[in-house]
Image: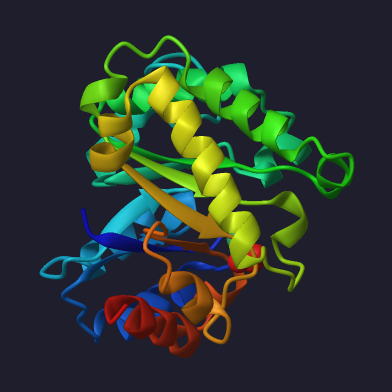
Length: 251
Ligand code: PGA
């Protein structure tokens, strides 16, 4: 599987800004990595049109836990599939914290995504308080186990697993390399117990997110166990995002 660079534009760009950014990003080609754009829901179709004849993939920033039906305001995995998304972000800490999303809800979302053959980008991460209290490992393993519990098809499906420490998101602080390696080891062990080591090796891409930018990416992209990045702030600038893509592409 190719390394992956995901632009999470969050709730920050209007249509024109999303399209302008897409046009700039699609000008450059990267043979060794996969580029994924996650615009806001109303602009997915317009961005998708611009991506025709490119290898850039589309991601939804969320997906409903329920199937198609009477649920005002939600967007079903069937619809996300219909628009042409290959990925959907689930479990982002901004949704866990502001919208009170639980692991159980995220688990249902992942099931719906797998039913539609959409690859989940599952975010897990500890808060600063949990980190300070020495609870990081416990929190991460619990999130992972809960979010992936009772998914019969899991061993056949691909997963992007994003370690996103809450204290690193949008803060300018990044994890250090030793910590990242420790977390990778813990999550690898947890998935190996849950499914198999083979599954982790062949179907899971372990990525990092949290204040990654064009200046600090290299220390992480050089690590053999890091398969990509989920980028917020720095993905709003074409120059920064393309520089990051270049660095990852030659890593
Ligand atoms: P950031 O966001 O790069 O702005 O820290 C990352 C994320 O929330 O996925």
